[in-house]
Image (cartoon, rainbow, N blue to C red; front, side, top):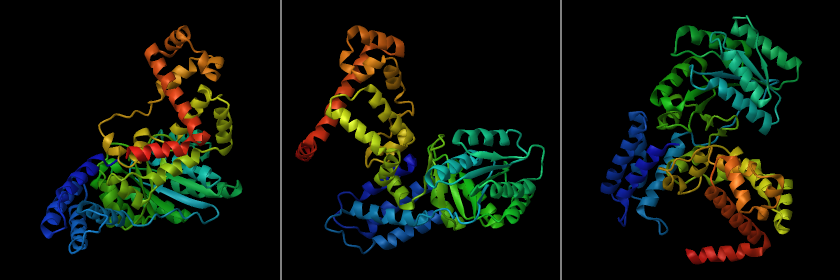
Length: 442
């Protein structure tokens, strides 16, 4: 996420290294590189110029704080301004209304239908809402089927009227259906086009007038950069939408849309899509995103994701097993499943301060655990519960059954044993000893 922009901003701040104070000369040199980094990220020229001018104004005349060097002070100023540029505050959904109607808009290919499913899943699982998905794309043959597939994936009902080519009527009927069947959120997936046209705008405007949505959201493919910002402006002129959804942020995005869109349409980014899974949806936090762009990580979001997957009862069960030396590969497999549910692996690594920079050239596959899972699934139930019984002949059989080799099985066994020892050490009061050892290594 924003790797190129992060790299270029990091290089820009190197200009200040070794200087005892921030002067007009080294500030100007640094901000020249910052502006170039923003333009390379497809940020609008006027926005990039205004941004660097504001940073320069705030940086000049400031004394270097005793705990900060000039580079750190400049990073802090840039972080604060990036946060403001992307909206400043986190803005949630307006879920008032009975039912709450959410109208999804955007161009074809922006990921609108998939994100409708992700949003339905988010509201169902995190806000305990009873959601109805509505298919109002009557032009694209596979659109309704795609929405039904998405609905099945997340366990949400999909309302559609086969043969009805009037999307306004479908939307009105869907809201009536929701009221009659106890649905408290209606998400309407509208038709997209390859480009903005009058017919499309008239249609979505008519749907908007007919159902009076509490939330009108514009879905943007973040990989289209500045074009996405221009399209958002066209939609906003007609719909006056409430917020923006940025999809495909896990791809090779330059970041221009995320950085520019708030300044152009003055509407907040509310959610981002970070992968293909239905769980790959995050509330957009401008301050956290600014920190990630500047290589500071996002520990808060990482902890939040971990807490979502944390099961207290399961944790107590694992603790008892560790205490009795009964922690086995079935338990290990469950831990892996929880990690996988947290999201895209490269995205998770990027949330760890400094790790994103260290791992930028490392290809972290979402199937990173595939080989481990194959090895564990090739073990017998007895072998999974009692790893100590796995001898040389059993390792050969496991390797053959999992499509791996004995060396890989040995490596997993070694990692498993190390992890088991560490977990027992942490549980048995060894945590303090480990902290002391780590302090001594600093």
